[in-house]
Image (cartoon, rainbow, N blue to C red; front, side, top):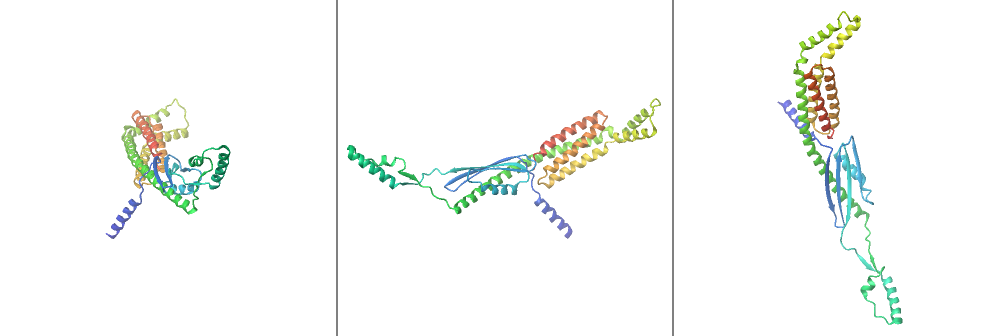
Length: 313
């Protein structure tokens, strides 16, 4: 009982450790702000052989790029990711001040001209509209404030990346359903090939016997050692049971990978190459129309599977 309990705990732990499948395609967006500045992150992901990151930030925000790369690498193992930051300044009215020196010089000039030309007094709003009288006050931001803002922008990026991961998992669940259906199709075709009349031992024996009889025709002068080689070649070519067994074994290996979850796209892609090799061999060995048709259907099913698994992380 104790051993059974340990086994159950180990199995539960393995299930908890298994990550859901992820697609490599997705999109997410997140926004933030601090009253002074607003920002938004848009993150996109498409297929990629490895993890390829492209980070675009406005001028003056280059310090965010290392953080962005680290946050993405924590969440994803494969895919071509584009991370784009947009910054928008607050629309509140700017702070201004009066340039007293400039205003005083303008008043002196006005008084001199007024005495000379007996002109009316200058209006204050007219003076204020002249260039240089009102100045915009640029508030110098401290390094601590900039660091707080960078932290807040990084938090927004983390939320966007979490959204992207959720989108990739959702797409991965849909892909898993499609992949399982395609594996079932391949398994069914392999078993149909195994049940085909052309694979039965008696049919293989009769076919090889006919081919050997043609080789032994008195009119064909073939050396004994060459004849033995040809007989061995014909016997090996006629038997495709090994290829069928490997196909069924590959299907079970693929199902096991799906049950384990996590980033299995690359390994499933390698398995597709093995599927394709066995299907090609089956077609090349077949001299039966029904078996050839099954082989061609197998090749089409394997190609469809390969197109899907290439979308998986």
